[in-house]
Length: 101
Image (cartoon, rainbow, N blue to C red; front, side, top):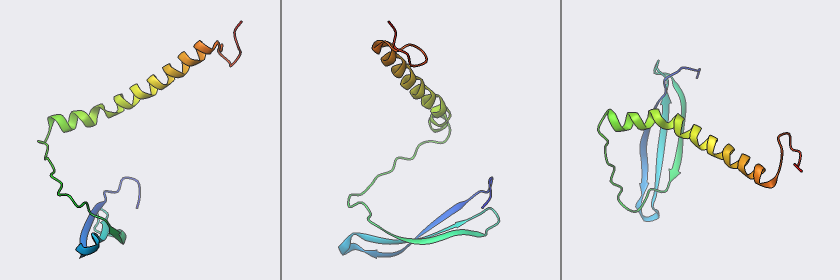
């Protein structure tokens, strides 16, 4: 694999063992040229309850959430540094790590 490759993953249910709640999955990953770059098998424990997926309409909501993720991350980082700075100020620590007063 190289930077910029497009990878397509395909998963096949190879075996089901309902009495033990187990499933064996075969996974194959191909690059954009159809060359196999990864393959393997795994035993998994599927959920016992039925899961209902809600399909989001294309466009609007899904795209805007994706586009705003960097801003949400930046806001969390700024909040962390603000809290750290406020804590240092409350403790009386001057810039450079020296105690004031």
